[in-house]
Length: 498
Image (tube, rainbow, N blue to C red; front, side):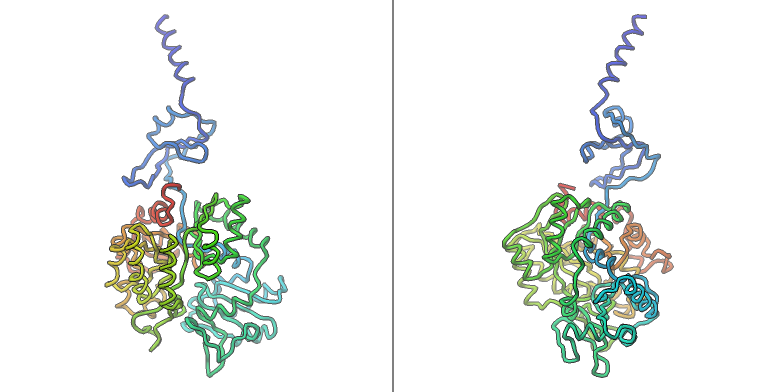
């Protein structure tokens, strides 16, 4: 009897003293910590929005108490995902414009535009997301049909990659664009001496200057909707790849009003306006919004033949693409970012642009070996240039879904030989030691499972092509997940906060 009483007292005391009280205990799980040892745990305790301990199930359940427990029933748990290259502001404007993503033909494009206008009745129609390669058409479209349907109202339709615009004659006239217009780093496309309405890369700036933006209220509502979509997919952070001064101020306002529910790492566009703002205000570190980098465009896109190649396009004789930022201006921005301790992340698609930037980036490494400057896309790289990533600490920021989207026409553009250095994510990982992985939404969908499938199987959502596109460049699941978590955090100087 005495022994029973002693045991009962011990049991009561230990029960009362059971662990620290926390907000949530998750157990019966496979929790992938993504740490350097790739440890997998059974349970975790969470308090005040932070994971305070990972460990064996018995240890966590005995050490902590909580009013809320989640039995994961053996499921896999990963850290919240980070999209290392997206465009929240572009997607917000796309959702407020004519939705052209996935349209199957020019007739489909025209029908969607007419339907939008019948509801909105705007005085300037803007649409986004068309891709002529889905129409079984290799050549970029012209505005003849657009002029017939919309002879008076300006219409501006932006290609899925954001590097080309199809505008009707009314919009061209409003922007002051004609057959004599010349734009450095851009193309005003002509046919038989007349504008076709197709504007590529820097020529788009003339049109963008006359497009009326949406209201702040509309943009905030669209961004809030996008955040909900991202969180439903487990995406808790986005590297916003290119902010105007106005975009920056809007994000800053939302952050201060606690309207940002995801972490946004902002890259400022390399404009003179942004430069003046930074010289006056410096870096910005808010609650869920951080800005300490610039985004620079080196060239255009491969789909619209704007990417700058060392040799001519295989499907367009004597055409090499476009350097959208002159080399002298690139040098100035490299020096500005070095002198002001800003990260520089440069859009580089073609092998020529990649070579130019990789050599320029050496300056930053000589100044600071932990500069973490990035090449956004690194899509076509001459094999002789891969070593620059390793030697100078350059981070490749890649989007696996681009590989499986582009496989329909990539060989047509660059030929079979150049595919050796194209969409080469495994090679880039071996050289750089890490990858920042994103989607480039709204060019691609925000769905991270499509990213994982593209990275690991090298196939699209329909499992095309058989055997995978350039399958020797597959990533393992762990490598892909690291690129969407820990390595993405490193590429934004966030590994100690996230």
